[in-house]
Image 1 (tube, helix red, strand yellow):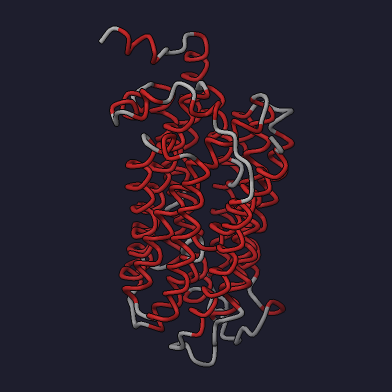
Image 2: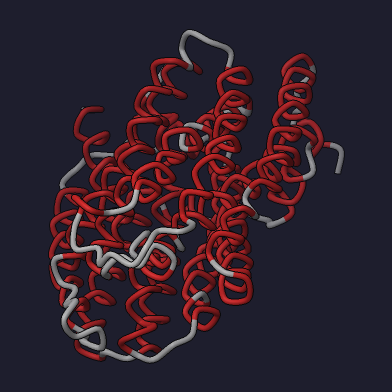
Length: 421
């Protein structure tokens, strides 16, 4: 199999969905003006995106190996192309909800397929964790470019304009190109489907996997991490606009600092995690993240009355706080790679489903809580909230390391456990 062609396809698929999924922060900001929506009402878009991811992942994780990873990704690209074309044509808040629901459903198919396919193109745990970080860094690059692309379609002179919806025509075109590339790419799924027929026959296999201690601690860690990430990422454009008083276009553009720093963080982590223990690296990341929150947010006070017109006179906090992306970004791909490398290949499809489900639930929870705190107490308080889950996450990672070592010394054989029934 030509691994380079399959890897390229995985990168492009992830790149496209990075722009679609993480446009939610920009869209949350824009719908408030275009459709006269409150902060808490706009925050529901995160739920449409993430809950559809969770539900679809639950439905598909047990059956996706029968459908085939390539077919699943092709179906996802076709769905999202159609929804993207419909968005500017309908131009309503309910269509925005439907768009994110479709993107969520499609991303569930993409992510489960991509995560399960990585095991087909890597040889060992070191290569697996490195490739996972590289593909996730490419995801962050997609978010970065997406912020700039969306900002080109925002009309600062007319906040109620729906011109920003025109960007979805371009994203539909990219989805079609991605579809054609994948369609002409060979994917050999024999290894990933080996022994999966029994797993695909019952949702019970997913539940049985979920209650294995190492998996249980992992999904709690993934849930908390994504809660932190989405509470910041989805609300940073609104924070820039309503707390720092940046114009809408500049608010979206400067949010790209978060994704650029996250991409760099994941890229460097792909190198560092080959040389240093993962627990040491991730612990340092979390402690540094909490320190940045405490040091940067006070800079958002007493900004003065000067009109902010561009990057040149933007406040310091608009540059400093988004650097948190560099510190937290390596955590997610690292723990995902660790759990997948710990489990046998035949369980990667089910495990990928669990990753997507609990990540989606974490994202919805984080954005929902942040939106309500933002509306009730303001943006600074909403971002200070992230310190609580950071403390929980660092504790969970220590437990994760302990139960992983225990599992590796005495792994659970699902095949044997089934044979007695």
